[in-house]
Amino acid sequence: MSDPLATLPLSAIRVFEAAARLKSFTRAAAELNITQAAVSWQVKALEQRLAQPLFRRLPREVVLTPAGERLARAASEAVGLLRAALADLTDTGEGVLAITTLQSLATAWLAPRLGAFQLAHPQIAVRLEASGRIVDLAREDVDVGIRSGGGEWPGLASHYLFSADGAPLCTPQMARDLNLTEPRDLLKAPLIGLASEWDAWFAAAGVEAPSIEGTPRLAADAQTLEVASALAGHGVALGSPILFSADIAQGRLVCPFEARISFGGGYWLVYPADRRRAAKIAAFRAWLLDQAARV
Image 1 (cartoon, one colour):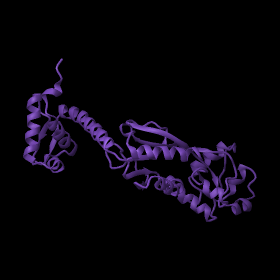
Image 2 (cartoon, one colour):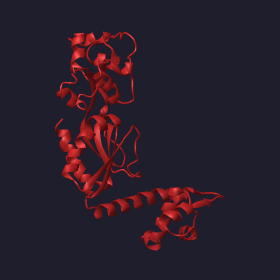
Image 3 (tube, helix red, strand yellow):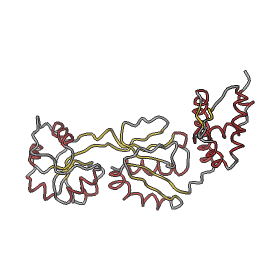
Image 4 (cartoon, one colour):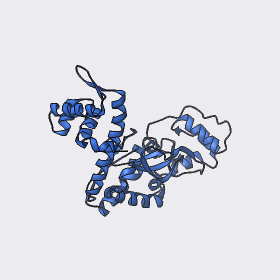
């Protein structure tokens, strides 16, 4: 059987991929630095070779046909693989490493350690995005992510770092004032965090049918904010003893009880599987796994 690629110009596939991804011949022309007429001609030639339309031309846009949708998925994947392979072949390990992760992990654990990575790799600059947004690492200008979960994301290589567990954290003075000797003592404590998470923690600690006196006084969308309130002496927060290990080691926080709840699996380093050989990703992977092994 003859190879169908042998009869198709790869330049037409590249033009089609850009037009399909951008949903516009005009935008594809601008990205490829050619004329709109050239884009239209290349797509038309490809349609003639395939003997079927790939786009429906509307007054202000183009829309993929079912055949176009099928080819677009394959073309997007193929072009992405080529871009990644070419980038890795020419990668000298220099440039910018873009990292995305959760705000709490970035603030409490990663950011204080990144200086050591940059000292070890001065040729690599680091850009860190900290938010709850799940970045599409295959399409956005971000190299790696650190996510919480089960470790399975399609198209991504993943490496387990450490558990995402929560336990009570408070200042030593708060622990003394509350006379914390057993988990049940926390039922009357000023609690910080979601009531549902505290209910789960009391169950894990063996305190049956807990009756928390009042609603927890603060619930935020990041552990760092809740633990900051605990550091200020306002109550007891549920936080990760790993993320806040420096505060515990320096005596600013204590973890009075061993019981833990899961905040959702573990923390994982992730990146597109086809970029595993990129020099800057390999350097960061080796460094981060070493840091995680020390927790």
